[in-house]
Length: 385
Image 1 (spheres, rainbow, N blue to C red):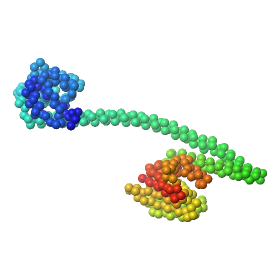
Image 2 (tube, one colour; image 1 turned 90 degrees about the horizontal axis):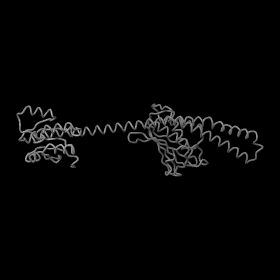
Image 3 (tube, helix red, strand yellow; image 1 turned 90 degrees about the vertical axis):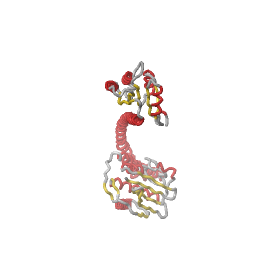
């Protein structure tokens, strides 16, 4: 045991024989013993080492035990040291009362009884150890309290900063919604007028370029819609209803089949019920199923499998296709805004859809991830709490 971990006892007696006897009696592995033969020496040791217990002889020349006790009690560093007076005078009632007045908490009488002495010392040391531990815990709690106050202050600053940022984002969204849409509509409108009224006056190249302008204007309009949808998700309140996932997926597939032609064979397995926002989860399934159809459309026999499995007490839903797949080295980019792993010429899209899906799942307290292999399909998974 390190000396710093041991409990310290200061034994004060003007007779060397008594000091040796008490040392022999009190010596233990978890104790560190100091000795002094007079009051001044005892005070120096007490100030420099702060013992956990003081065994103090009452009758000593120059400075007796009462004076030592009084001085110790008056010093801030030593005032809490428990003191046991050691005396040969069993019947001096006034002397004992004076000792208690000077701060003694107990008396031992010479010749010392080994069992009684060890019992009293052990109890007082145990109390001192508990007091020290309690004091350390209080200090730790005070420090933790200060840290919490500092963290709360930082959190309040962050909240205030976040509110400012949100207002700026609202302003930005308004700008996108109005300031960008107006010239975009103008581009689309005038391009359509050109196509309707001046198509015959343009050569084939002119008509081709005009169609490119109209197509890009439509794509940009769709991109703005998706970006606004993404920005609004942070504000939308999340409802938590019981949802029959299989019926929801079947409805999504029906809606997709009405809006787009495809050749994909879609198989739907068992899908346990979930708790969440019906409309938002419908958006998730619609996006993931549409993507699976889109990225597998170039296959001879496009196939899509939708199912689920249990994982550590939760349910993981998945949608698997045999399409274009992706390089797993770039999987971290899948859910970023405007991040695409395939050329827009090969597969149309805005690059915002999966970012919206991820935000919806995150708002539900869940997680989403994907696995894929180039030209060998992809599987998207999501888990709801």
